[in-house]
Length: 145
Image (cartoon, rainbow, N blue to C red; front, top):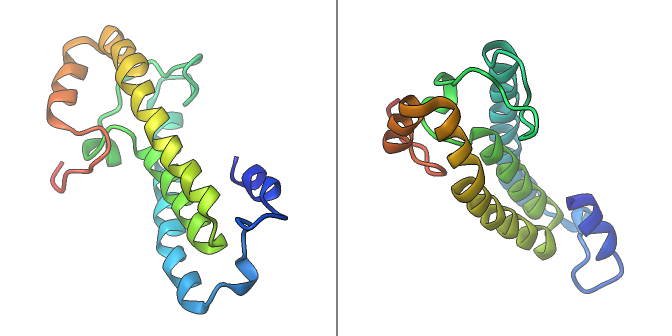
């Protein structure tokens, strides 16, 4: 979506301007890229190795409840990785539209998880998921697993 936003705003006052980004702006974006990449690769690997089949896609869910790695700290590490990438894109491209897309993405996914995915997970994994939900926050990682 970010490339589409950049393309659609290319000839406007909101156009991305990576070329004019200072070294400090570029350095500010790198930790977000690194953290997002680590979270996404780690969690996708956990899904592949421990998920018992299935994918990240809601129409083909995994069979096993995963309570390893970053899932011990937060419900949605994959999406947090995506959000960190969107923050990095907004910073590196100096793009207000990409930042606004990131905000909309967070809001949309918050509603989706609360009203669609979490009820499905409660049905599939029962008390184990209810205990997890009670002890681990959706978006804000806890320090100790």
